[in-house]
Image 1: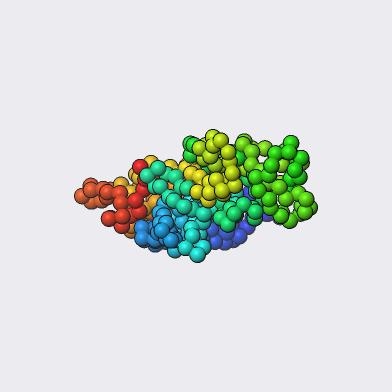
Image 2 (image 1 turned 120 degrees about the horizontal axis):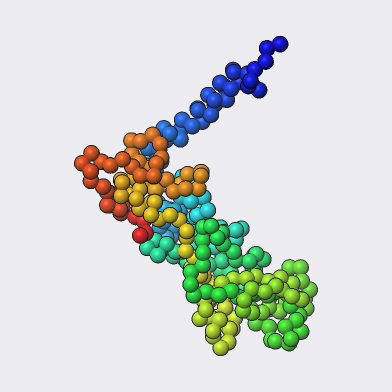
Length: 273
């Protein structure tokens, strides 16, 4: 019996190699298409427009970070973070931040999604000026030492006598109550002498700011080399170049040595510095 140092037959190895190579070809040959798509396609919804590092709708996924997908619902841009849907109220490219508000609090305080507000620490961080507030649902009157309820909500799963709700500073659990939700609110709200229901609901609608953690230097270098920014499966910012087979960090210099100036005037998305 002939023995071979390889566990698989040469024909099988050749077939696997051929399949891998064939799957790699579209990525290489499509780089110019990636360049064209990411150069021109913006996310547009209502009065919000977005370029890199975002994607969604007409803007393909290879143009932005996988965790920064935007959607458009009735002209309202939204983003999902750790299972919670937020309305996107503002995007500040220069400050690399966006202001978001929990969608479940759009129409009031009584129909929440019982999930705490959390961020992906590798991608997003809270902007300064916010502190945690815990909104507690389904309490009886003595649950908080007889403090008058801030609001009343009939929450599914609680008895008719357990409709009282409260808001307390910091991140705490529900205690003897049914459920609680931690949300960031402006420090100005928490320093108010009295937090009433209207102030709380307005603060939730105004939302809070988060900053994204994406390598802006890599993208700026790409644009200066006449490329357009995108994202690879390896979770790295990449640079799509015209008439080039593969994505790289930057594009080759133009023949005359002139580099493009960042901005949409040259067909590339503007990037915050």
